[in-house]
Image (tube, rainbow, N blue to C red):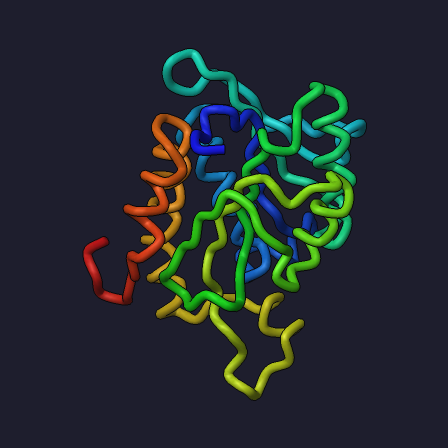
Length: 203
């Protein structure tokens, strides 16, 4: 699979309650909310999909659907599977955006396939789709500093410095997704996978 033009569903991962807003684990929700705003897609809650879905036409007449599972992170696959079954889409048509502790804050990593890497949302999606051959965009949230447990780290809020960096990363996420849709994943990977955004930078 060399061209992401087959992508028809973009999924942002997170947890639905207000107390999880702006936490590291919800950066997938923030990213997909940005796409919806920019593309002027309107969210609608869909019980069949156990999530919120938005759809519309992207560039060149391409129809795209956006999904925010409302199942909580570790059951995200239920929602994604329901959408694929309803619209009769293959797993390869899904692009998932989610947080990654193994990447530092200020880094992105786009891949065509791969394992869950310990991420519970991705474990659920891979399990429900029966495949790991679908593109994913990981957004770095950094590791714990040794004083925090993993759960409190991912469910915690970004520091002021990290928040500044993330305000520059989210536009980059949008650029990466849009380039992946209009050209190839390799092109987007070559341009964005090695970039690092730092506090005070002009990215």
